[in-house]
Image 1 (cartoon, helix red, strand yellow):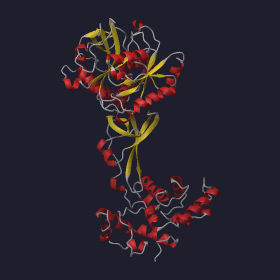
Image 2 (tube, rainbow, N blue to C red):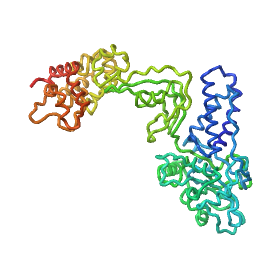
Image 3 (cartoon, rainbow, N blue to C red):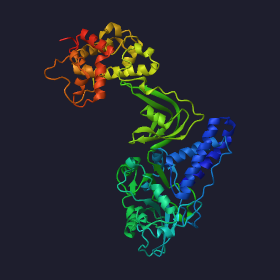
Image 4 (cartoon, one colour):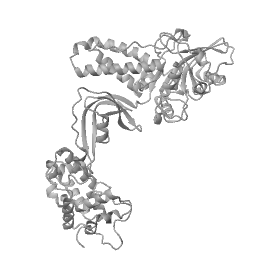
Length: 575
């Protein structure tokens, strides 16, 4: 598989290189990247061709190879080692057995279908295994040949004769039967959309390359036949005959289609429903095609592949930024060169924590692989090539922010990290107005940023004093919205104490009720509690009790509680 791609991409890059040589400039970082990509590709090729092991996914291999060829134009002294397979006997295929061209988008699939409106079309899952030709002479398996290249492949006959799931004899009067298909590693209820390929191709490739294999391994190899080139039969008749010969894995895996919707239905079905094998897309075939004796050693026009949405991509880190949440947690973000993944454009991903950033030692300029976690969220998989020289990191310390930092607007300019402090202050206000807290309609992060930039916010509660006249002059507010904001501010005063405590960021207080029956439900009751009082609550440990004590005794929180009492918020005024 890698070999075919290598030749195709070599042709493309050679045709591209002539016009690009004049654009080359001396760039030490590019030269280093090309050199390290060359070493990686040589390592991957060596593992694949000598051990039958794929160290990376097809997507990562293809994209890394493309990047290398693009850079190699300017550094022609860098070359990949000659690709070779084990020295086994090479035999000629009866009929050309080649790879398929791949369609990049659903639009291209639609066009391919439209061009064959007078044809009967079929769709099949694209097996993620190793291609094979099986030749039966007078009903007996006489040869098994790997796909190979240039019309010849490795002689796998001896190995295939020891595979119990490959019929060794078929009941036929025909002198010769040539079947084309895939040897795959059997998986149990494999769902491609959830489990990727579980290294299935590596396992079957390694099995076929090894000289010694055991009988238990052989039982895990299945054969999936997707074509009988010289049958002269309709596809349905082919399938019926294959089933009667014992090729049971082909059942239900060839379906008639007339439209893109049909193709998408089966693509989604085989992608999301259990199968016995890994797949990496679907294959479309037309019923009528030239006689197999005339097939050429190149991808045919009458069959095409459409791969599953990519789940992994290679890209470069263009910048590292940080966001600070309302509790002071610092989250590093990787800004990436934009790329397509699962039909989405992705340009950033979160690393979750500063610790992870330090452990992975990711820096600007690094070449990385990104995959979709749970098929939804992009996340860093690994660093492929590290930029050089490595700069001294200047990450903000983990204790730069905490759950009681940035409680006032004036703290922003005083902070050694003003941008992060501003983020935390606005994150606090965004939480305060959310449905989990005061549930203030029509007030978002952008609203708070606008009020802060206008100098109208002192702390987490000063907005209660704002009037329509204060708000109306602001750009983007206007009369109608200023009245809505003022109404929300008024309604916030009516919220109970417990809601306000959550809005101000009080740490969780365990599973017990906040007040005992004999206690007065007021701020002062909570502020008077000791460390032991807080720790006595169910679900509150020593650390949480200390946090609660610090919250109620923090001078800024106390100042804001007094302001709320003056504004008539129930539960803050003294009983």
